[in-house]
Image 1 (tube, rainbow, N blue to C red):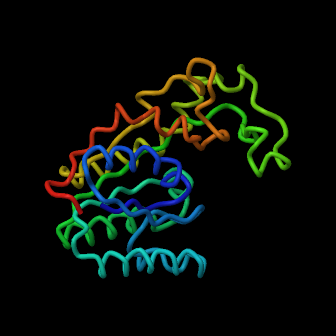
Image 2 (image 1 turned 90 degrees about the horizontal axis):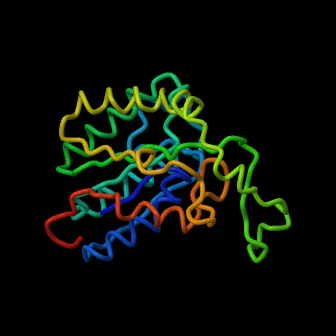
Length: 217
């Protein structure tokens, strides 16, 4: 099984790897921050940087060289890419490519954003602490404004609803359905306003119910 995407694929990796371990499945991850979660980019090439094109090409080549991969999980900050003309067509192109090779596809929606996009929670022992010395307060970690969240996530929901109609067999998982605040029992689940920390990633493990492959990969 392969996990592809941007930094949102990265922050879900601990959850996916633990889920895969429990199901005795071998996983690989292929992500790069700020890069659209695609395996094919011909519909979007003119709007991609060289670095983005190179990464997406590497993902496709990896898939071509690993014929035993039967499941691909796609994760990304979807709403940020929807502003690019041709992105919807590029996603469909990627799904069509994966389905044609006999691959089951899952898409992970975004986690709800915290209020305040300059927030970052980093423990004093973290090597990045000197860049981000201020921890998020309890108020900031629980600053889930329902109306703001609904407004922020609506473009993503519309986009995923459209994909669900076009691809009935597509598995779409919504982590935002299972999280109502940014901490659990006083422990932060976010490392910044949009990304989970390790605790946050593993928090979602009981709610992740993607059907595992029939045999280990």
